[in-house]
Length: 204
Image 1 (cartoon, rainbow, N blue to C red):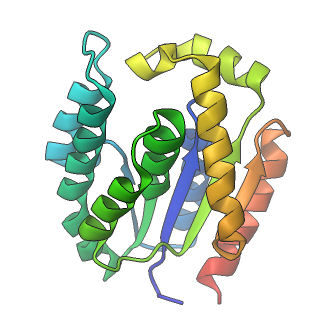
Image 2 (image 1 turned 180 degrees about the horizontal axis):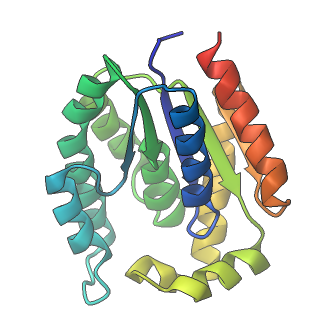
């Protein structure tokens, strides 16, 4: 186990990633563990500029353009991630599996292309553990309707259903590095599950 792990939170919009990342943030501060938190798209200065372009409500890019914009954002972050992993834990709000779930399972883009681009950008960078937050259809759209912050919030229920199915397929292929969290359960229950796992990661 690396002294400074790379931990990723994945899940469709409205699944509660931000809430649980904030809980991890508080835990790491309490334990005096150095860390950095980044999001995708976004994170670094240039990636945040790309994020505004991708998610802007007035923009209407085709699926292929979206893919390359997401990859461009990731490209701007990779060196920052690698640099910090030498001295801090890195917590990511979305990463490579989001691209596969959204762009392949959600928008039917070529999986080999996506995997090839991810492989090129990561250059062997390994994820320590991924938390996948799942949500049922009713709660998903209740939560999305509460925020409506970007153009992805208006995508169809079929789109999000396919995205979540994609996430679950990815998780089941590598369960030793995934924790599937049912966010329809009480938040306090999931907080304990996630913190327990994070504690175990840092104490292996």
